[in-house]
Length: 180
Image 1 (cartoon, rainbow, N blue to C red):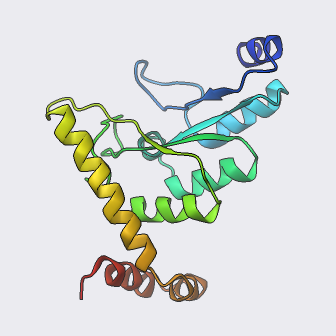
Image 2: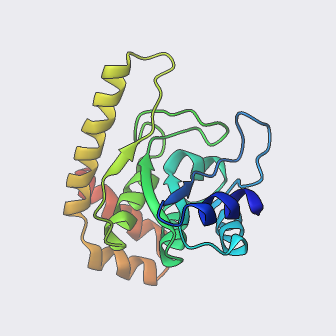
């Protein structure tokens, strides 16, 4: 853990952040998920190192991004939040909610739940699409999903979750989206 401890100790006035990722450019990376990264930071024993929680990287790690966000936040190590989307097998950097609509809504609700007030950043690289159009699509999606989050009956959603009624919880989300 000297690779974490040494620079952080040498510069205690600087906030360092690790953006974990399961693979790319290598096939496997040691700090591949939120839990391993939290353990490594804890083992390094420095206070000025945290985590960038990238939605797509969390998917790639096989995590539920909303759970990973809350875990990192509870440990006091959340430094930055990034949105994009992926197919889970690679860091695809797709436009927001292009694949995982409900998980993106769940993530945005978790961002609200933890009281995050810093900007939510886009980490997106348009490999084939026009970059301006792709980023504009993500910004539009975020705005639309924020409106959806505003319409979600949180009490009804919590009640469905407490009953472990996935179908009722899904219906709350569909209702907020405007589907009947």
